[in-house]
Amino acid sequence: MTEPGTEAVFAPLGARLAPLIAVAVAILSQVLMRDRIAVGPRLLVPVIEVALVAALVLCDGVLQAQRRRAGILRYALALVLAVSCTSSATLLIADLLRTRPVSVQVLLGEGVQILVVLVVGFALLFWQLDRGGPDGRVRPDPERLSFWFTQDGIREYSDDFQYWQPQFLDYLYLAITNIVAFSPTDTLPLTRTAKMLMAWQSAVALATFAVVLARAINILT
Image (cartoon, rainbow, N blue to C red; front, side, top):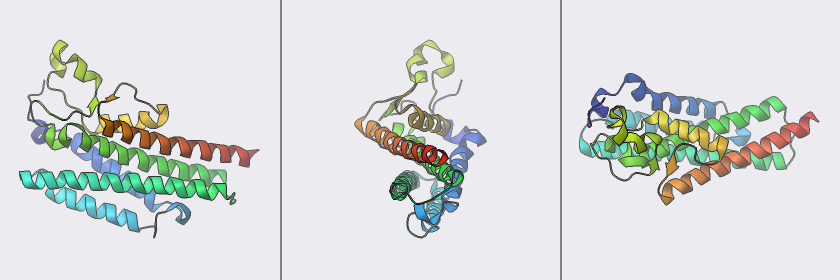
């Protein structure tokens, strides 16, 4: 059982590295994108994201004023990822509607790249939005709940979850299930902002799945 207020100090190394690894994978996916679905110059968005990550690493986990700045940087990074993958999905769909020739392998690869960035971007958004972000969750009674996890409903029945708080991997799982099921699974959105973000992610994923799979089937047949 973990005492409240110790998450930021004694968080496992994996929990600290998980968001950085996820963002690195998303940035790599953008670097490998073809020019036709890249937003602006192909390396422009990845360079902006690397700069935001560097600034976040420098100011995260120190004085309170800088913690607030870290929250702003997390939102900025998440929004850049979310907007860029939405734009890439729009470019891909527009390109496919013009019936430009492309192989199935390239088409599926581009779809996967977009979905990877989509999952990571919205996982970061959910992570920062809920309960005041990672800094807010170190308090014994976090406020501003945006999502209700299964563990939240069994706190009073289990000592193992008395002080449980979600970490980045919980929000990554939420983002993955939202693009597969297009709806909440075991985690419920509580605020309109959370609901609209989930709707945004589902809409982009659904459009990408539908157009890419339809075009791939058309090419194969």
